[in-house]
Image (cartoon, rainbow, N blue to C red; front, side):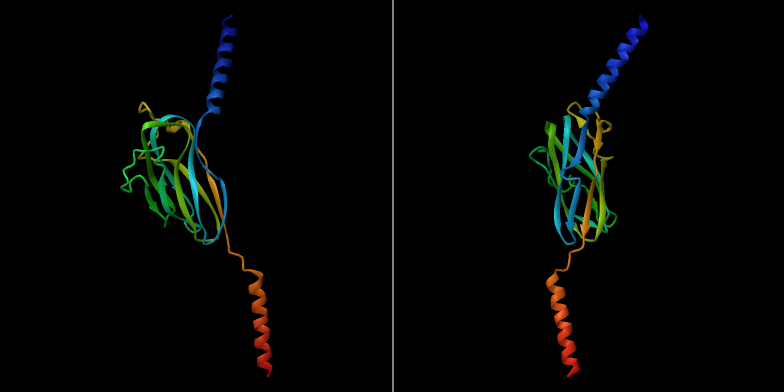
Length: 189
């Protein structure tokens, strides 16, 4: 009898564990595969989904600085109204090493469910692919409405940014071939 009860209890535990993983909080991007041309400016929105009621948190990002550069960070103050506006929330940007650390966002009223956290504005400076990686900030930890740390319950997505060279239009090639022919004709005379 004890064996049957133990099996039933274990089955219920595994079921509940499976349900809790289905609804795990995730921080991701509005687009995980971004394609732009060299010289383009573009924005990536950082989004939270399936969150319990939180008071705030912070994120760190890494990227390939030879491919993209961050121009600015805009915290979503509609959700995270506890915004000082002194530049601290936007984090510490180092475009030379490809890091944005310690971005911070906080709310007094709480945020839950799905919401936009921030917008990161980029410039495509080189040709290639940059992975945009994200993790919890070591300075600004995710906390629920009761102050409990919940960073270990959050999964963090990545994005891939592909920057292509600007193609030379066919009209340029036609112009250049005509110019070479003209120079060739004048050189014969």
